[in-house]
Amino acid sequence: VSDAETTALQAALAAEHAAIYGYGVAGARLTGAEQQRAQKAYDAHRARRDQVAALIQGRGEDPAAAAPAYELPFAVGGAAAARRLMVRVEEGVAAAYADLVRAGAGDMRELAARVLQEVAVRAGLWREGSVPFPGLLERPPTRPAPAPISS
Amino acid sequence: MLISTYQATAERHPTLTERLAPLAAEHHAHLAALGAPAATATPATPAATATAAPSLVPVAPVVSADPRRAVRALVTAESRAAADRVGVAVAATSPDLARLLAAIGACEATHAALLREGR
Image (tube, rainbow over all chains, first blue to last red; front, side, top):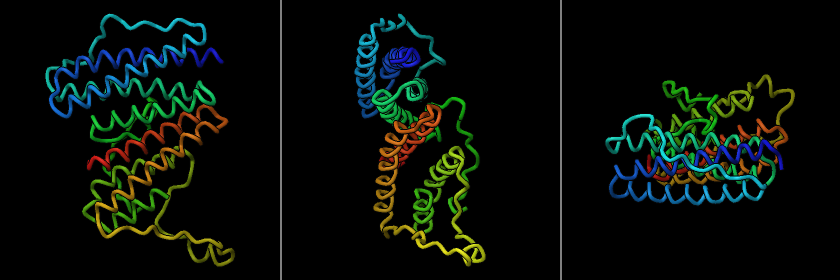
């Protein structure tokens, strides 16, 4: 049990709080299958929030509470902006779990690596594209002209 | 290994090239980040192998003639790679390397999902 691990868990919890808020906003702008996908993601984030909060409590620390409201990075007036917002919040969550991979060991690291995959998949489906290093802010996608597959 | 599968799939199904190229490019980025030499489709020069021929020669992956099956094979390969990365990340002694490996696994899991969804 390291302090770095607890700090990283608190950051993951904060990211989950933000994601839950973001999905609450974005989900209302979607319809049909996309709304269902957003609802599933919302439920997944709530479950992870509870799991991470319990892990923090298990270390004798107080889980950080959610903020009453969050500043949105842009106006979310329609479905396209809603999808962009969900990409943004999932990327924030991915960064937190990537850091938890680094701070954690053993089971904690394994949990963080698995959650990072789930988060990256959701971001990718909203983005309709991938990034090479989900969660690694220091390695942003370069998006060059696609290289030919045969090198 | 994934890169050679992408190469073989695109060669067999040129109509998939546009869809697969960005994913293959990300695998090249993974190799570069891990410090591996860039993968190339061409085997080592005969001069290099003349003195020390490898006992095991890489075999080109077999690609289904059905493009949908070929894509499904990529989904399977990406999913397996993503699952394997978790264990490798847990075993890594360097925390920074563990984080990088986990991110690569997350990219592979995303590839599998995008290919499965037909994107």
